[in-house]
Length: 479
Ligand SMILES: Cc1cc2nc3c(=O)[nH]c(=O)nc-3n(C[C@H](O)[C@H](O)[C@H](O)COP(=O)(O)OP(=O)(O)OC[C@H]3O[C@@H](n4cnc5c(N)ncnc54)[C@H](O)[C@@H]3O)c2cc1C
Ligand code: FES
Ligand code: FES
Image (cartoon, rainbow, N blue to C red; front, side, top):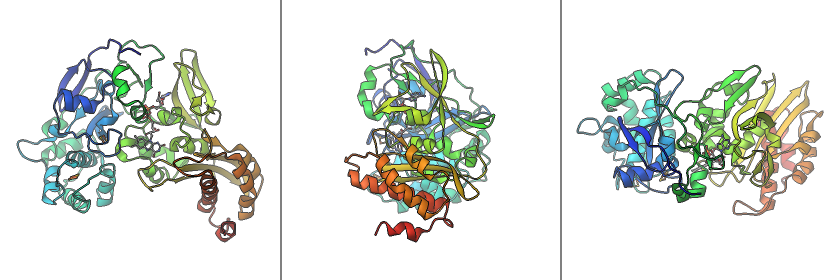
C-alpha cells in the first residue's frame, strides 16, 4: 500500500507542544533519535525486549488527570503519539543538575557504560509516579523490563532502596503526587501543570483494509520498517484510560485495555483472584503498558496468554464494524491458523465475562523457557464450577498444542457430572491427550507439549482442589 497523505501529528514532548508531518507508521524511537537528535533515548533490540528506549507516555484517567507510564518507544508509532504526552530522559532534567532519581543511581554505582541508564532512570521515574507500595521488591519489578549488560543489578537494587528512602509522603498517583515530586526535585516543573486532553482523532481518511493497530506490540515486531510505508489505522481514543465496568451481570472489558490495566483492575478479582500475580508472567511491565487485550486475541497466536485466560473464563467478544455490532463466543472466534471470525473492517470492541457464580474457581498455568519475560510454550486456563462436590461446569483452554488456541470441549464434557478427585482427573487424561494436536517446533517436540499439557491439567486441579485431589495418585502416572 502506498503512503497516504496524512494530517500533521500534534503531541506534547517534554512539556512543549510539537507538530510534525512524520509518517504515522514511523517508530517514535526513530523520530526522537534521528529527526530530533534526542539521543538520550537509546536504541537496543527494537522489539520491546531490552528497555533501552523507555520513555514516559501520558494517558488521561477518568478524573481528567494525566498519568505518565513507562513504555518502550520502539513499541510506539507516531500515530500513537497523536494527542499524547511524551517525556524522554532529556525532559527529566531538574535545573542544571541531576534529579533525585539520577542521583540515587549515580551514588549507588548503578551505571557503567551508561547505555541502559536512561531506560532505568525512566522506569524508576514511572515507579515513583505510579507506585502504590514503595518497597524494593516493587521497584525491582518496575525495572524488570530493562536489561543491563555491564553493571549488574545489585547496585541498581541499592539505588532503588536509596530512592525509596528519600521519597516524601506521596498521595495517590495524579497531579497532587506529581507536584509533591516536583517539590522534592525528583521531577521538573512541567509535571506539576494541569494539562487539558488533546483531541485524539483518527489520522488520515484511511480505507478499511489499512492495517489496524492496537498497542502495536505484535504488529511492530512482525512488520518492522514496513510500517514506515504504510498508513495504519489506530485504535480509537488512545490518550484515555479505558473504562472497565460491570454492566448488568457481566464484566465489560474494552478491547483497548492493556495487560497492565488488567493487572491493576480490582473488579476482575471476582472472576480471576490471582490476576495480579499471573499477569506478572505476561511480558514485562513496560510491554504490558502497550499490549492490548483485543490485540492479543485478534493476533490469533496459538500461545497468546490472554486468549488462554479468557477462554478459560468463558468470555464472549463484542465485534463492531460497518455491518453493526455482534457478539461471538471466544471459543468460536478462531477458525484456523491465524484465521478468525473478524470480517474486513471489523474490530473487537470489548470482552464480556459472564456473571461470576458463587463457588466458581479459575486457575492459569504457563510453561515457558524462562519463568518471566518469555512467551509460552504451552499455556492453559481452567474455569470450573463445583456444586455439592460434583463438577457442574468447565471451561478448559489449551495454547501451543494446536494451530489455534483450543477450548477443550471434549475434555470438559468428560469431567462434568463427576466428583472432584484424582480418579476423575486421571480418567480425563486420554481425552485431553487426544483432543490436543501439537506439532514439533522451536518451542518443543510434540511429545513434550502433550506431556506439558497433561502436567498443566494436573496443576490446575492441585491448585484449585488441594484437599480433594490427591497429588500422590496423580504423580503415579508420571513414574
Ligand atoms: C517483548 C514482548 C513480550 C511479549 N510477551 C508476551 C507474553 O508473555 N504473552 C503473550 O500472550 N503475548 C506476549 N507478547 C505479544 C503481544 O504483546 C500481545 O499479543 C499483545 O496483547 C498484542 O496487543 P497489541 O495491542 O500490541 O496488538 P497489535 O500489535 O496492535 O495488533 C495485533 C493484531 O491484532 C489486531 N488488532 C489490534 N487491536 C484490535 C481490535 N480492537 N480489533 C481487532 N483487531 C485488533 C491488529 O490488527 C493485529 O492484527 C509479547 C510481545 C513483546 C514485544
Ligand atoms: S530498543 Fe529494546 S525495548 Fe526498545
Ligand atoms: S551500564 Fe552498561 S549496559 Fe548497563
